Length: 329
Image 1 (cartoon, one colour):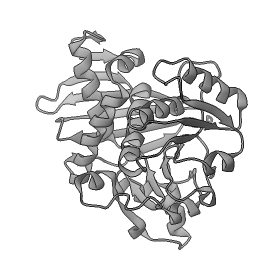
Image 2 (image 1 turned 60 degrees about the vertical axis):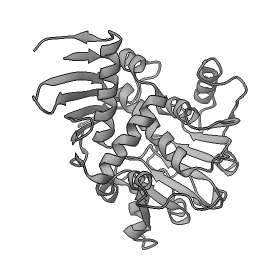
Image 3 (image 1 turned 120 degrees about the vertical axis):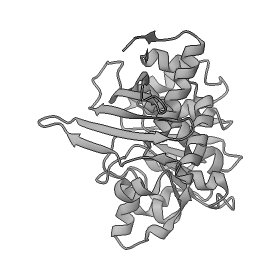
């Protein structure tokens, strides 16, 4: 079995390659060539932490496995993010474990790649301005992944901490992965940040809406990413009702997509408001963007098929490049 820590995963899986991997995985999801029980989680008593388990099977690449994640508020100054855990991938023919990969880095890359894929499919081709709501690790990865599919002129970082946003801006400006000619700015006013955006990504830990539908201009594409449980919503119901609404996996969306379920519970829409899974759009079974005036929303909850496909890709690349530590059972 090959063990890949977060540095190994980063070295073995690029955002651009992961977009292609996730595209294939999401087609498999919509074809139901997968087995994916709903995400299970427990709260850790007397802490703000949660423990999450996501098992699954995917037919191509043929494998099964599980992601185990502890989600705790990040420690100031720590290199570790809020999601710490591991993805374990098994050979489906023999049942033998193939790889144990750092779950935080793999999740960050595949989650941002899923948003980039949705952006590639649903955003206007002439989109030039990205607004990222949040400034944590996932914000950084989203910037890199969106840049892999879209040529941007401007990136706006929104958050309540100027200091943390500034650190992210400095990281972008010093990275060879972010072009020098892209303007990157901090905006403390959420409406101002959103109202000029072509693409909006919400990547916060907020349980209450930070994004309001009335701020969105015609033609905007939104990736809702941060909220992954029923009791959390990063966007208000106006965002949902104004938009053509897309999801990754209907079974999980109808159980855990807080923004969608809040609007349904309020009687504003029903489940038919969902245009389709992103895999169905890729397969041609559901319509994508049909005009430059439409607002599109992709609700990302994340599915184990993404983790498994990304894990196998990272494993194969690591084997080819002699990365990681191999152990015998």
